[in-house]
Length: 128
Image (cartoon, rainbow, N blue to C red):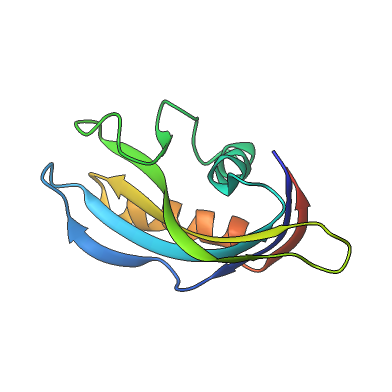
């Protein structure tokens, strides 16, 4: 776990249709600046700390573990930008992540995606 300098949404949650199990899918993407090498773990910890998922039950990093479940949230590493080495020698990583929220209930998927967006977007100086 590490220190997140900033999390900024590239886009607010958008509906991308339904998956093969007829679950509504909402997607949103973020740019992050952090001293942590693996910010996906930090983002999962923030989502879980706010009561919006439980890691390895309905909240996963990367590929889905429970495709047949009614609802789940995925945090996916999507690359990012070159790391920076500021004047004090601390390396600042600048990854991007995508969050996908799935639910059989469209309104529940939309509400959860919006809640996660509100937890993450525009936050600064978080220690996770």
